[in-house]
Image (tube, rainbow, N blue to C red; front, side, top):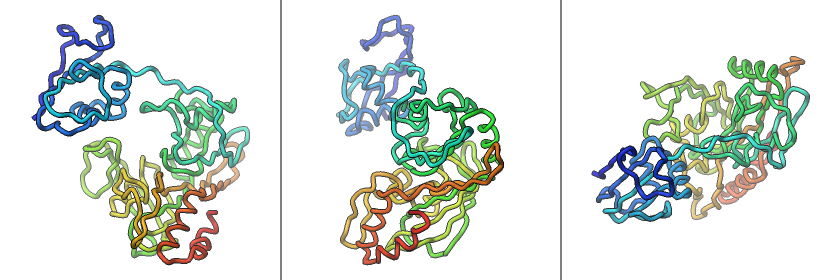
Length: 354
């Protein structure tokens, strides 16, 4: 077993890049055979349930982690016997700052704004992310946004995962935010996604009713399965229909009836059909078709294609569409060619989404 000592900072002071009077929590680890060969950041995160790997990497970059009294990189491979000292300083307070970032605006009026969010963009600050977010970009437009979701999430009524692209709706004022929030809670907002999943799904259409909770072993994931789940569980329903089968994949149109964290990703992973590109939920990093290995997608094949909602002021029904991104369209074309399928057939299926 790896030995762990939690330092009593009132009695001991390690040689970290801080003043002796700093009372931030400090921990000391001594590595034995169980830690040999592990990366430094992975090892510390495994020994400290309250620290994510991303947080550990921040502490390392800040010089708050020492190995045998010296700073080290997170990629350091441990040999055993090292003395690791960690000081956990509070994170600096996050703020939503304006940034000049171009946005693809799908719709805008005095109450709401809809954006075609690209993959790779986080919606709002959090978990060590403070720049490059959708909120930063909206504030950079001089945008007036509601305060219903707090100062870090102005205007945000719902979210899309970082590597999911497509339609996201934002409220400009508190009145619109309250009405839209209630519409999402009452499941009055129609949410349609396009996704590509591993392996062929035999049924033409179906529905997934599996409760979702935080994965107790990997906190960055959600888990969806029948039976009793640990922690807080929330009901979740996902409807789907097959648009096309392409070799060992299925192209699906998905309707969300609830909006749980990672819902589509967790649901299809539970069915053993993970979303292509979604390595967090079991997908391979590259798709192999026969003897051909396709280039890595470098994102999840998941796109919020349509959003239908009732306008909070006019009560008009509005449907917004975000065309399938070129990266996903091109990937399907390459997939079809590698599988000996017709790219024209795939384009005919995709016509309503291009």
